[in-house]
Image (tube, rainbow, N blue to C red):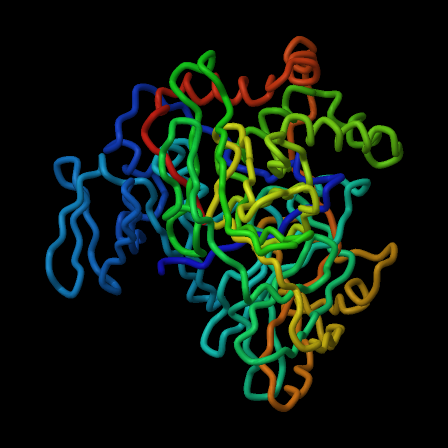
Length: 509
């Protein structure tokens, strides 16, 4: 209702250990919910808040251009021109809108209350993580994609698939995108193309992480969903909406740093395969922690980059570490006659746009008329919106047309079409915050009797602008490398030190 935010996922071997370059924390101590909502100097004011999600799962959207104020630990605004007063203590997430009139760009993001304190300056301004892709919707450019998150060096360069739900052809029959660098990093885009899919009317088309489209129109929501404390999460995990479950680290990291969520679905007799249709991604605190983890390497981070760029064994070690820790890839465990066995992996992504991803599952060993699925996300690292199951990936054939860009020009009028046309050694580089390019594609005719879904296929990587100096913290690196949940526990300790633990449960979209 507030935001259909989505986010691309990483390919499994590079899934975001890597870096979604999130906020450099400013000092926060002994915060309460009201001070969390007070933005730092230079951040947009409360009028950028267009709605909220409450801890009991209500989505509240304020009147367009309504004034929003903070009074006596309450948010005050209007709905249908009537004053509404909502205690800050009831809030799980605020929804923030930013508009750049000069570039005709528009974005909406959701930020959980618990991390708003340490992320406010960046989160409110939507200024983090990977290239931002804006789609022309006929009126303005709308934030619609955030590709190849986590590919923080060339050895991790990867393909990504962003569902451009806002993209519409202009009056000249062109699809237009705006690609921007809005963070302190250099972004290298190797190639771009559109995958234009014409399909039966009403079909729901989503991608797996390898770029294969799936018809998931018959996907069903979980019949039950509960966490380790027995909390009912069905309303949080059933649909793509503004209710996102993002459990944050607890006050006492020694008490445990993982959630355990069990979902149950009806299963047709004889079903041997299923597809998880999940909209979930990296939580904002988890994204911030990537920066902290990299900074442990100090002046050795350049050598680490070089090893990942050139050494396949280093890439494999990183992949295996990521799977074991489940910080940026999530194991999907299936109940097979009372035993949990991992039958799939859900890549991460985020923090601002989360893509729906299809993950095929082998359920041939599942008996009975129910399918039980278990996930164990480390607290603070995952934001979960919906977990549906599809047993039918059929339907009439769909037509996939790949469209190469016809023009690509930068804001300083350089032609970079040759940099984006093929997977090769040429890259369109954006080294500076504010760099941007306009890319256009000829819209193919819509096939009679069909509807259209459009995905952006990109390939690239980026390099953070980090201070690469000082000694490495070998003790901490040893801890996160050898200790089970060592990185998650370190993240919880970092969270607790800032005095904001316990302010929020739930997630982001």
